[in-house]
Structure formats: C-alpha cells, structure tokens
Image 1: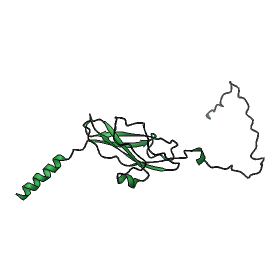
Image 2: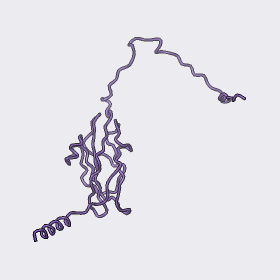
Image 3: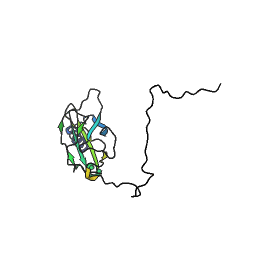
Image 4: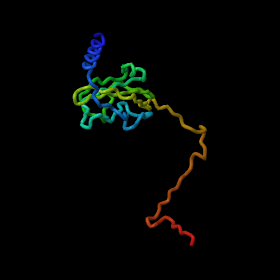
Length: 175
C-alpha cells in the first residue's frame, strides 16, 4: 500500500512538470566572433544558432542575461542586462541594451530560447567578451624617440613614376 501511494505521488509530480522544449542555443557569438577580445563598440550585437531535437522546431522567444562575472550568471543574476522574455524569432544581430559598458570590461552572457509550444529550453553555456578602448579619453600615448631632432628619423623618400610599358623581369630556367 505504501509503495503504491509513493508511486502515485511520483507519477503525479512528474506529470505536472513541463517537458523540456527541445530547443537550445549554441555557438554564441558577439560581433560574429566567438569570445572576442577588445571589441570597440558600446552596443555589441549577439547571435546564436538554435539546436533542436525535432526538425520542424522553431524559436518564438529569447532571453539574454549579461553580467560582470560568470558566478553571477550561474546564480541567475544579471548586473549589466536582463532582456527579460522577448517574443521574437531573431537569433542574429541582437543589440546589447543594458548598462553602458566601460573600456577594458569583461562581460559574460547567456541566452535561453522558447519553442513553438511556448516552452522554455535550457540556458546556453556562458559566453564571454571584453571591450577595448571605447572613448577618446581612454587613449593615452607618447611619441617614441630620443626627444631630439635626429637625421636618421628624417629622410627624403623619392618615388619615381613607373612607365606603363614596364613589365616584371622574366626568369628563364637553365637548359
């Protein structure tokens, strides 16, 4: 009797859980690259490829989360951007719309997809990118040299016009 009740309970719990959607994002890219370093745009564009268990499956929505650390994403927190659920089949050129990014910042992101039956799939693996120098104030440089006028650094270079009939030298093989 006790085992029958336990079996009934397990079956009722399992039947209430929604089955997985069968769609999962893969090959996450930022600006058409996998894990790019030093991107120079303030609003990078994300893309992914959908993997599906069924051939006729389609994406009906997505959710992107971006954070400053991998640990935050693993805890389900996004301190930079949480797009929430967006009803769209787009999977390419999805623009970042979160907090302003800083120069030299590491950004971790992941995406989740919904299928045609409006069921969510699992989260993607976490992807990463870093920003380059985004503002003109970030560029710091000094001239390289001795600080004095050097005749070796100033040279006159003459370029002579080349006649149109000039051809490259021909090489003959020894006979």
